[in-house]
Length: 159
Image 1 (tube, rainbow, N blue to C red):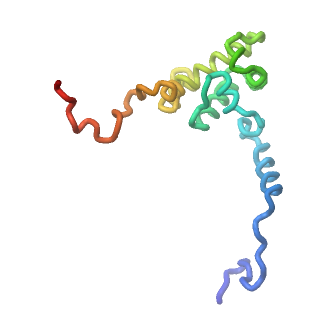
Image 2 (cartoon, rainbow, N blue to C red):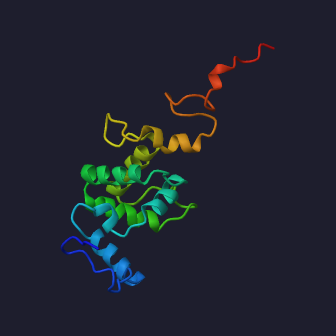
Image 3 (cartoon, one colour):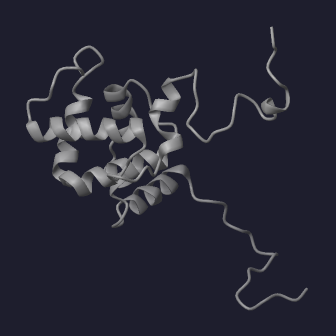
């Protein structure tokens, strides 16, 4: 059998994937690379979103875009304080304003971002994935066709 240079010898035993601890350690190392601040923080943004908004964002990309945009608007320190402040609250006291004015303003902007999908001012990056459409079961985003595929082929009853 011809082998390419550097390819393993099929008669030699092949090492199986590393154990779970090695895999987890490797993934943790990847998360600390620059440019992965959302993931690297170890923060539980889905949980924080559920506490502050009453539900989780279905699309993790929209959540990441919102956190990243918020960091660029108000600074990573304020976003970090916001995250910590949210996780200290529960559903009963989340409606109370935060004592820190910068954190309160950031919380209002964050909720606006995830409910409207307007991640950057004037640009609705995540419009169809916005929480508003998840919590309003009786409607869909404009430009998303009717209830089911082909619904327009049958005219409504003329009773």
